[in-house]
Length: 426
Ligand SMILES: *[C@@H]1O[C@H](CO)[C@@H](O)[C@H](O)[C@H]1NC(C)=O
Ligand SMILES: *[C@@H]1O[C@H](CO)[C@@H](O)[C@H](O)[C@H]1NC(C)=O
Ligand SMILES: *[C@@H]1O[C@H](CO)[C@@H](O)[C@H](O)[C@H]1NC(C)=O
Ligand SMILES: *[C@@H]1O[C@H](CO)[C@@H](O)[C@H](O)[C@H]1NC(C)=O
Ligand SMILES: *[C@@H]1O[C@H](CO)[C@@H](O)[C@H](O)[C@H]1NC(C)=O
Ligand SMILES: *[C@@H]1O[C@H](CO)[C@@H](O)[C@H](O)[C@H]1NC(C)=O
Ligand SMILES: *[C@@H]1O[C@H](CO)[C@@H](O)[C@H](O)[C@H]1NC(C)=O
Ligand SMILES: *[C@@H]1O[C@H](CO)[C@@H](O)[C@H](O)[C@H]1NC(C)=O
Ligand SMILES: *[C@@H]1O[C@H](CO)[C@@H](O)[C@H](O)[C@H]1NC(C)=O
Ligand SMILES: *[C@@H]1O[C@H](CO)[C@@H](O)[C@H](O)[C@H]1NC(C)=O
Ligand SMILES: CC(=O)N[C@H]1CO[C@H](CO)[C@@H](O)[C@@H]1O
Image (cartoon, protein in one colour):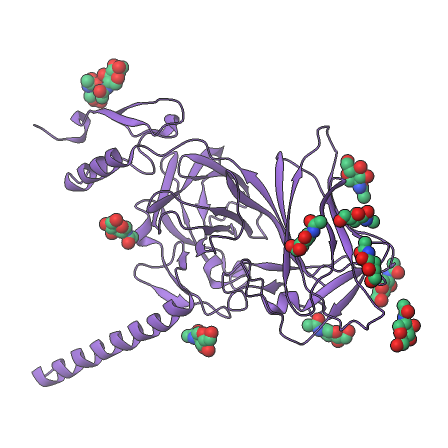
């Protein structure tokens, strides 16, 4: 290649890079604050997911261990591209991703898993996922289906650790990690984080799984939910105004379901495995009511009034928040009822709803100054030990060679360090 041609080539490459950066900038504006990690994707790779258009990047810069794998060909293209690859962790008990975030911002954190017989063992592993030092959930996946776990959580540090922990039944793995900023005044909790049970779009007639980004600017997944035969479905093609805290998408709010028999309540039941649940009900009237018509209802959780006499506004979203305290006794279900008031000429409606478990994460990260100091030591001396996640917590996985002091729920301190086994002298 001649010198001029080389320069031209370089120039073109720079232009190409510029165009890519410009494209990413446009996307970055739309996907403000999104962190979209495709685990097991090749180093430095990225792509725009179809059809969401979300830019996914490789996990290489977020994790130091593990192996890149692909699901078997017959399992590819079953879900979004992010589920075709995964990262598995045959070595070590606990392996962690470290992801930079904006501290004190409310995030939806989603982890996705699809085994897809990647190791040709036909044996789905079971393991734990931890958020920092706290247990998030136990991952029991299936060969043929993906699973998704979601948390609404406010990180106190400018990073989060997502850790996969072996429990003795197979090799942990992960397919995808999403972080999406949420409005601070939505999904409020007095204490604790919220772990998703259900997020349902009711009344959808089209044959769709549901909706996510770009319909939902926060990229929540609204799953098509039906109880065939027991509902009448209503819809409108008008836009629903949702410019409030929760911002459920207009397409989700544009469909609603009402009980068939006009005097029946709208009931939802679920089996509790946590003490307290948060329920968010999204309502909007989709029918233009005549002067002699009315739609009014009360909402109860476990028989207790949560919100009395609500009449949804025409083409505008009202979100009602209820708590449900689980009742003691095995097999006792939690219930939510939407009950027509005596005055109402029309049955209740429901456009969409979300149910979350309240999870208290009591174990704190190690003292921030100590974490910074030890992280500097780790990178300066290029320590090869399996130092991942929080240094001191949980205590069972504290870093080898460290001694920590613990005082109740306060952040632990690092009190001493023994590097003699790391090949360091002096
Ligand atoms: C960004 O969003 C705007 C409107 O919200 C849309 O018109 C545009 O196509 C989007 N751009 C990309 C690259 O997704
Ligand atoms: C995360 O932030 C730290 C500084 O706070 C920086 O050194 C590091 O490179 C960042 N990591 C990534 C993957 O961007
Ligand atoms: C809206 O209702 C009509 C008539 O019931 C139906 O044909 C159409 O599929 C519905 N649209 C959606 C988006 O559910
Ligand atoms: C409820 O209404 C829908 C639509 O009007 C109808 O298809 C269904 O058969 C009804 N179910 C019952 C149990 O009446
Ligand atoms: C409401 O008024 C319409 C005529 O405007 C009538 O056909 C209908 O029966 C009335 N409905 C009720 C519940 O009174
Ligand atoms: C809901 O739970 C409350 C409290 O256990 C109970 O009194 C009520 O009958 C239940 N409602 C339904 C519809 O099962
Ligand atoms: C609905 O709630 C109101 C309080 O807002 C109460 O007065 C009324 O009795 C309730 N009606 C039903 C049917 O539960
Ligand atoms: C019942 O309807 C009447 C007339 O619309 C209204 O004045 C009254 O406040 C309503 N009662 C309740 C409990 O909503
Ligand atoms: C950690 O503390 C224990 C008990 O105080 C002590 O025996 C051990 O030598 C300490 N280890 C290091 C690395 O300082
Ligand atoms: C430091 O670690 C080495 C190797 O693990 C061990 O032999 C030595 O006793 C440790 N020193 C202290 C003070 O714990
Ligand atoms: C009785 C009661 O709690 N009513 C409230 C139901 O929710 C609507 C919308 O948030 C409020 O305006 C009512 O006051």
